[in-house]
Length: 93
Picture (cartoon, rainbow, N blue to C red):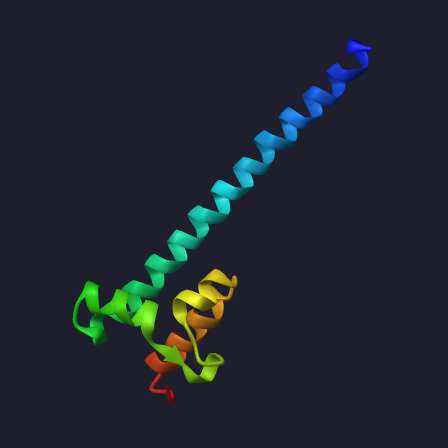
């Protein structure tokens, strides 16, 4: 009976290790996206603190009146970056 459980234990251990690696990678990618957004916002917001306040509190009408933080949490960081690129090209906010 324990012989049959050994492969299951190995399988669960592998799934746990692989799954935790994916979680870490997603968190790292999200942090990099946030940093990129803040770096783009900081020059026109005036400071890092102001950029972070914009990121957390400013609703973006073009993106459903959600904040950049809301959008990143939904996995839509690229939408925020596209929006910021549009503004950089003198597009409407």
